[in-house]
Length: 317
Ligand code: GH3
Ligand code: MG
Ligand code: MG
Ligand code: MG
Image 1: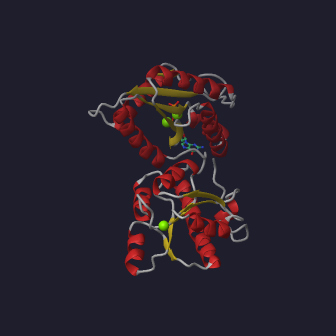
Image 2: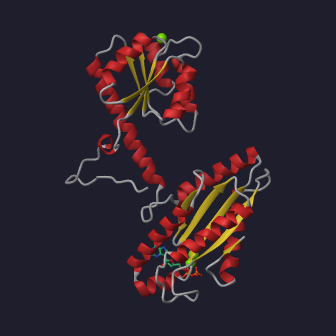
């Protein structure tokens, strides 16, 4: 989960192409197979190439194959390249995907429109293969650097799970989604028990290590791809579980509690047992348009308070 970055000039340079660990994925879109062929020759050796001969097919491949960059023709029957680009830029999942137009058009009006709909570059045919290759490499490097930075913005540096910023965004998004689909959204808040004493006794560095262990243990309990763990603050974590009712969330919370206990992180000054434990507060509801995401947090917090007051080392919901 942690992103390895080489920022030290003595170390490997920050080259996301080297760090990718796979061939970059390129989508070539053109209604004329002969044009696709010409571009394919340029990139086949260094890229994993996907091809589409229409706008709708291109959008489908963007969603299924997750290309790193798109080379896009403008004139195509049905949906033209401008419209394909507009749709890519309007889609929250695709909007960071760089689009480069490769087209027989060379007039400034088309180039302006191409850049205005969100393309990063505009290449007129006939093209020089070396120039196209170099430009694509530049745009790809920028895109992958952006991906790494975006990832860093949303990851907690100590534990490697998502951070509070990501949690806030994701909770709002899942809340809206649950309201549209009339499904339940669950939240588990996790707080480490007697952690101040842990730090006082074992030291802050050991405390940091324990937080890393708690984070990875919680992460290891998730079963569905849509579930997530984030560090909410200090020694508190929060888990968002889409399409999960209270009974389902309580099950997972109890498994998390047991897993932390089973990790056997020694805690001689805990009043619960000789090992580190956590308390968990669980809440779930169907957002109906009158309630706010904050109310889900408040409900889970109240349950956390109950778990603490009933003796810690347990889940309440
Ligand atoms: P309770 O069982 O009621 O939750 O008691 P507690 O001691 O866990 O609660 P309290 O809120 O009093 O203390 C939380 C502690 O967590 C205090 C703070 O030093 C520690 N903490 C917060 N963030 C970090 C961190 O990043 N690293 C370390 N080592 N400790 C942290
Ligand atoms: Mg065409
Ligand atoms: Mg706390
Ligand atoms: Mg605590």
